[in-house]
Amino acid sequence: MSTKTSTNTRIAIRPCPFRTSELLRQGGVHPVLARIYAARGLCDPRELSSELAALSPPAGLKHIDAAAVFLADAIAAGKKMTIVADYDCDGATACATALRGLRAMGARVDYIVPNRFEYGYGLTPEIVALTAREKAPDIIITVDNGIASIDGVLEANQRGIEVVVTDHHLPGDCLPPARVIVNPNQPECGFPSKNLAGVGVVFYVLLALRAELRRRGVFDAQTQPKLDSLLDLVALGTVADVVRLDANNRILVAQGIKRMRAGRMHAGVAALFRVAGREARCASPFDLGFAVGPRLNAAGRLEDMALGIECLVTDDEGRAWAIAQQLNEINLKRREIEAEMQDTALLHLDSFEPSGSSTIAVFDEGWHQGVIGIVASRLKEKFYRPTITFAPAGEGWIKGSGRSIPGFHLRDALDLVSKRVPGLIDKFGGHAMAAGLSIRADAFDAFAQAFEAVGRAWLTEAELERIVETDGPLEDEYYSTQFIELMDGQVWGQGFAPPVFCDEFRVVSQRILKERHLKLLLERNGRRYDAIWFGHTESLGERARVAFRLDANEYNGVTKVQLLVEHAEPA
View (cartoon, rainbow, N blue to C red):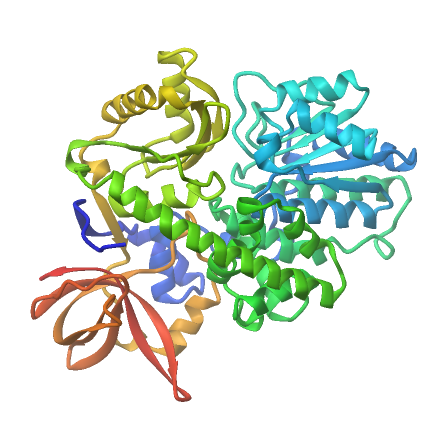
């Protein structure tokens, strides 16, 4: 993609409550980290605990005890269960977690992965019919979907199949008539973290079920299955689903990463690290979100997720490695398709002037519906506008996948469009930052207009300006590999942004690398630092204000600090 964007970007320093950072520092937190944490709203050193004992207890989740009792009864009665998963990384890890956890507790359980292109999203009546035909279960357990599947649950009930919904998506106006629903986002659920991913919800259900089986004397503390062995899967799904890493999610991710670094992970996770060329012994949330997760997601995007789930449920290392290589191939194909679609999108948007629009909606006959979400994400990054990209879905229908910016709740926006223009949207669902929908192809222009009207009403000029949030200047002595190691020991991610510093530097030299990146030598207080600005080639003046992350760059056995530039502007 070209680097020219017509959106305004400015560097801002996060406000940091001095008193809070002082209290954290006095509580033994490193002075720079104390400032960084305070700026992210963390007030109490106890919120930094990454020990499992600090997790919010399962009892806070509405209906979780009912789910535990129902599943424990079903296991005792030898009932057949089938898991129906969503087809992304969160869905795949949730399915593998549920399958491994339930089997360890004696359940007769299997899973089914419907092809998303044939059966649509969620527990649809068609998927229920397929499941009944192929698996003949007594119980269907949904993971990472189901909260909007009213018709599907009705269909299951009519066939005498009971449904347990575990999900984290936002519910619509009415809930499905399932036997039990566990979802931190359902009405009147008092669970302190609304940000659990689908895999997090299912992990909690397993914790509650194990406690119920202990109460019944099936296990004791010695004989019970070790559910912490599932935490590599929980961490992977949580990071890949880009849910907010609040204190509770940070514990789940930190524990999973700790296991990966110690080499205690499932065969499929290890194989995905290897095929991605990443070292599990220095695993980071970045690896999970940008190397391991996408390879798993590719299967659900282009083919079906069965391959991804099989990778996570097999204990055979050879099989896991063979599947990981297949997933890698699919991911390469996904990248090619995505690159072509992006080029086409930019042609469609050739005359697009961000200053004159609050939103982007774009459709192309030749697009692949498994990849539109990624393209929407890239366009949103480039133009900094809520973006929905559409691909044909057969029989005159098109499917859209959207990504949003802070301050614009995408699912609520679609809800408003559907209320203002009844009948325009067939179905929709999702979150604040990502959502999907289907409409008739001939309704595209009407949709684009209605969506833009909501954007104009909701978004102010200030919200349409991209802000690079930073943690301000960094003292000279912390431009060190030791400080980088200290930062790498923390869990950063969505809603708990990794530290970005900013300062003024003299630009000693600059050159263009591989025709795509700007390589810089920057100087401050008589010290010089190598820096690189990926994807940018416009030259900087002799003084620049630079927002950057610190990176330990190893070259010929020597590790040096380099600055990864997030944004730079003339000083």
